[in-house]
Image (cartoon, rainbow, N blue to C red):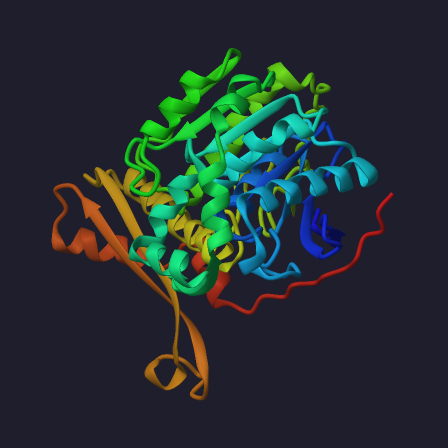
Length: 409
């Protein structure tokens, strides 16, 4: 199900832009996500974590804090305290339109914000922090040598992650006054802490301090090898799946009925949207089930081969099978066949054997390797047999594809 876009007002009456990611089936719980400092609701980590939680029946609200992304207001007017107020406003909105959030998730400074906001969201039963600082004042380290300028001038433009933001003295004063120790100690909610031991932005010692300050139930998960922003999709997806499993114990989630796999008639391949991502597909070929997808760069989750990968796999598998059947029948000493394939587009004029001479055409490179004590004549014959692969013949012959719409019952 595509994310729902809407606005909700903050404490100052400014509209904050939000996305609500709902699962396709029943909503088992609602989570509120707070993004990292100067990031936004659309950053990769937030998007992949929300997509992952949807698969487990957990709806996720992510939004742009005041002055960021598509939200109204001036970033220069914001402070850590105003971010906490934005989180409370988001929870109030969720309470009215879906259900109050049972789970609070915060990334980086957003993690510190959910720890500070948790006591104001009574329905929240569990809190998750990801690469969070123990002290919000840690963010001052990102401002480098501009801190003195901010204090003396009152407001300065600072470049962070390639963008300019105006930072005021009030922001520095506010983070300096925060003391999360008491908030963490009196959390009275289950706490899950994620942190990478190689995080170069917020050191692992911050996770240790949060863990020591918290009372049980509390858990720590090491994100070994991950960076601060969880730029690798696999890291964000891992976080989502661990959160969902951990939350089962604390959120009293209703049992989630397993999705019925796609099935078809004998000889029929069925492909249907998995709805775990924008492009992910479930593929059923008889008793066999697998996923097809697209890379992250084009909007997928990279959870399976893309359609052209599957096409090449069909040609490669058919080629190898055809060669094997022939070699066994003729008792040739063929140990193994390996087929490597690539798909691309070339200018038609560069194809000497093609009838089309204008524009671009599809082109497949197929490199076949034979292992075994084969003589030159045997290798030549096996290459001839490879050309007779049925899928090869299908791809190079005239093919009719007839499409009809089937009414859903």
